[in-house]
Image (cartoon, rainbow, N blue to C red; front, side):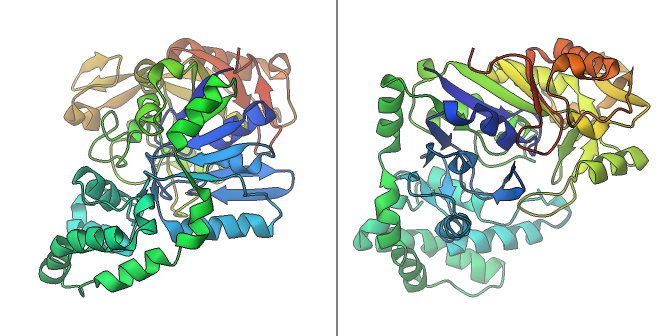
Length: 428
């Protein structure tokens, strides 16, 4: 049975929850391997809508073991808030496992994130202010707090003291904020120990044993490829590796264990926060996509920037992730448009460029070169077979497939759990 990586192909918010849900009961483990509560999945189950931020969306599927792996940064207060909210709605959350090596987001990380972003002024990155970046910075600087530290008060206190030695100088002398005491941080983190302990495990061992034992493991990436700290539109990126390679380092599972890489891509493009976006729309078309697609952040509520489909970005995603299958979402949002432009290349200072440029300066100045496709007016939300889609919708999907570097195996045609057209088995 396979180990599958599921990632976003654009700048996030592509609808990865729908792809996870499509695999449903065929998956035994769903693993969150990067990021924190700075991104969200919205999953619709019947008449119920669930907004998940830190938890993997597989927690909504009965029988699945959800795992928060070592590559994630965990705000423990948010973790328990989400668990309690799901529990109150009758969702079984007892199978959740959390890596002992995952790093913890503390109160000082959240404070630093907010004040630093304000301090940047016009150079703001557009973070969510939830402490993700500062927590990852501490991890790399080797002054981070890990989940396992919460169970040893002496070690926890030593690590918090070491982290706050520098941070309090910064808060007081640069940002004119009050110092944070060691006691308040330690006391807060220790208060979670008893509730947290039963969930904590060596998740690398757990997942490797599962794969060897013939179980199907799905690695679910937060954020998306173009927000990857190494391969995205740096510095307007997240603080972790949201690509398929991140699933390996973020979980402790070897690369030769990965069988498939599924990339979720919207039938148009959106992003939240600052940074380059060649196909961004500032006209009525952009408002049409935002309103009809309900393009507002699951975590922040911020309106998303909207634009047409960008084929060079899809090709880039296919290349660096080794994409075996695309899941195309929100095709129904395009219903009613007379023509649908697709970016097929860029104009950079008079040069036609077919691929995403390595230079961020070039990418900032890239202007989309469009090819237009005829639209359709028929309602497609009830369609479940590709052949039943309007001819123009079929042609649009096939054109995107040709341009994007891998097969389009499934197509989202509505917000409902079953509103999907399957062309190829994602596990075959």
